Image (cartoon, rainbow, N blue to C red; front, top):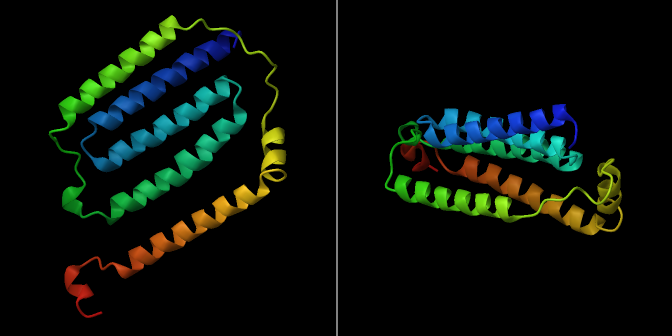
Length: 172
């Protein structure tokens, strides 16, 4: 991370992540908060790219910015319209205090740690991880994919079984 362009890109992505994360917290509309969360996920992928963690960046885009965001959109769309606002709750002050405490702790750790450069040259990690996932850890990889498939089928079944209108469900 010696190049000035990479350093500038890192700080721009960090600002994007912090700004969109703050807007997630401050947004009143739940759909707007979800859009800011997607921007925050994409900014995190950009941070990983500036740190030469290409596999984690692509996983961040595919898993979080793609799959988790779509799952959240489905959850928001299936909630009643009256409960979609992000109104005030009693948990704002404890949430702010917890966030401040965590930020202070992370800041103290960042200032107290002696940072050194990477011990190895980062060329690419995708080849190594792909060979491990389809070689040594292929059974765990396949079991995880089957579990995710069953979770998806279960979610679809729950959506089809539960009535959207309580009066419709009585006739079933």
